[in-house]
Image 1 (cartoon, helix red, strand yellow):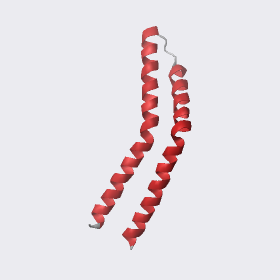
Image 2 (cartoon, rainbow, N blue to C red):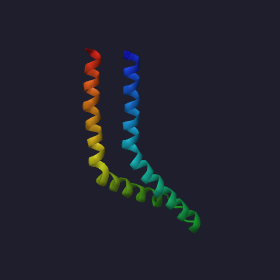
Image 3 (cartoon, rainbow, N blue to C red):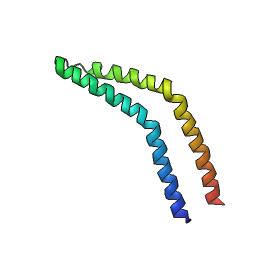
Image 4 (cartoon, helix red, strand yellow):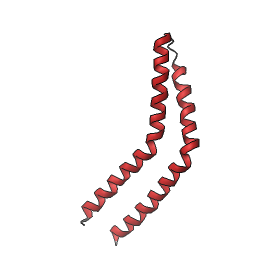
Length: 90
């Protein structure tokens, strides 16, 4: 396998890990934003803080619940990527 292929594999792995770490937070914030938006449209209440505070709370909850798993994934990826970079240099 050539160095170009190895570097592309590392870039692909990096994008996947980034997506796996960011997805829970983004999906939760999207779901809350959609629900609050529907409620605002139904009640004609257009308060900006009404969308921000629930998203902030849900994002914090997601980090509390899944933060350990996210950090484990990131730590494993960092160890793996450093080993692969060392192998590329050798």
